[in-house]
Image (cartoon, one colour):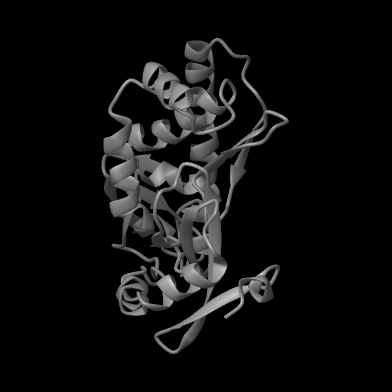
Length: 239
């Protein structure tokens, strides 16, 4: 297929009986093509060299539809919340105690989360509580890493993105996915440190990675590995 015919057209590939969007990302530093599935299963993402041809990328993705189908099958299904449900918080499972007669306010205890009010609104209320906890913790993380980076703390926005853990705009605003409140502390903090490093180096150059290694107190590679291995579980919808 002629490559120019594919330009500016949304790309899809058929996987397990459905049309899956294919998003291409060209990088000057890429030496080969790599394929991943978005954490929520909404799209396939293919990284290729800047000079790579779209037609070749499409053929590459089509040759790996069996792998993509297995990855889609592993995407977490909606979690039905109720008394006795296990909910992750800071990387630890917390048992949900629901009593309709109790106040609606969420109370966290040792490995437990207590909540009252009607069962049909548990999901939205728990998500709002988690988002509030995320803002509280990430605000502190941002102040910590900005101090280490010698930068003023920029505006913070929580993200509900289905595709990214964090981002740093050229304006300086940093966005962090609220779902990271369910991950271990160092995983959440690694994403915040990554975006703060972009305040100094707005790229992924060797200087950026060296600076990130200076301000982040743990092994960034282990944190990245955890997100690749476990991150998809954080996208489980609340039913």
